[in-house]
Amino acid sequence: MSTARARVVAAIEAQKKNPNLKLKLKEKTEYFTNLLFYTLFDIDTDVSENITVLEHTFEELVDLACWEIEKPCSKIWQSYLDTLPALLNKLTLDAQAFIKSDPAANSLEEVYMAYPGFYAIAIYRLSHELLKFGLPLVPRLMTEYSHRLTGTDINPGAQIGESFFIDHATGIVIGETVIIKDNVKMYQGVTLGGLYVDRKLRSTKRHPTVENNVTIYANATILGGNTIIGANSTIGGNTWITTSVPENSIISNTSEMKIKKVV
Image 1 (cartoon, rainbow, N blue to C red):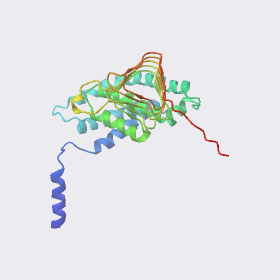
Image 2 (image 1 turned 30 degrees about the vertical axis):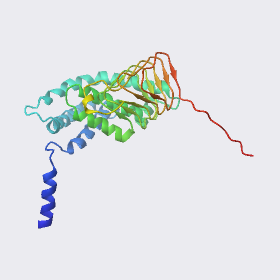
Image 3 (image 1 turned 45 degrees about the horizontal axis):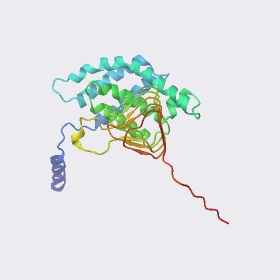
Image 4 (image 1 turned 90 degrees about the horizontal axis):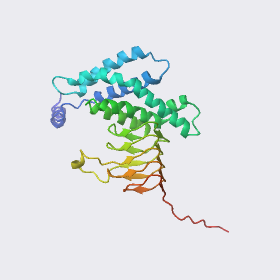
């Protein structure tokens, strides 16, 4: 090795100050995520065989992502596996919500294979359940993988109820402490976020709550941990909301439109 090259290598190695940063964890998590999706939905995938592969893959993830010496993360797999049938039931309700809500949806098969909103919800639910077992990095990587594929950013810490519908998906942001209850519909560009970013807020409820049967149209922005969108409300497109909305409300953002006639 030349002296110049050795200097470059030494400089780079000196700057690599994160001993647990292994990018193959990211790649392995993406592989694990795809395996999960196939196991739950693909009719040609042998469930028993795939679960065996999933278990081995999860063991590899534990070695990469669980840095405690005694590896307590290794006890998670069976508990997580036990949650999958109930998760599949929830995802079936989500898929049915797409059929009920979108006249362009022709079949459940189309929803499963062609709707980025459904995929984002599926990976969120799978990651959220895993997060409960105390392995935070893998769920985060799962939802970031989904984010990259769908344009929908759902933090695995969010709490989302049954029959959730996301149409078009692109540009949606759902923060870590968001609570969304049942039968909520959401369109592209919606943000459920915090009023501001500060590390001191880490352990606080800083994102909104959305009650049952709410519809939120495109590009609405709803901010703040104390902000509650009351049940059965409709939030119009391009609205900016930082205070709570009562039940059965209709919120709209209208502007005057002038049409100039050209002779």
